[in-house]
Length: 52
Image 1 (cartoon, rainbow, N blue to C red):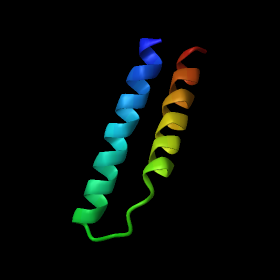
Image 2: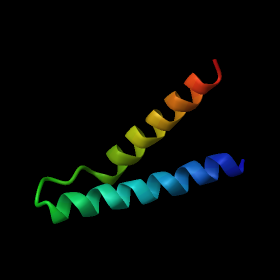
Image 3: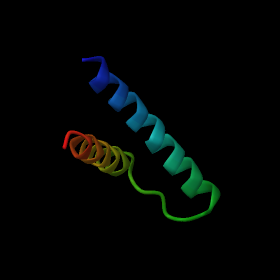
Image 4: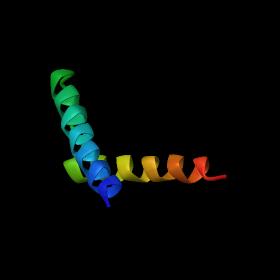
């Protein structure tokens, strides 16, 4: 259970960092949910690959 909580916290942190970096570079910032969904999918895909 704590793994899922940690994944959510890290995804929120990644969303904050991506949006902050986009605003600093003056480019269009992606939505927060888009960043979270992509981050979670990538982490789960990497985790699935490590099981093989």
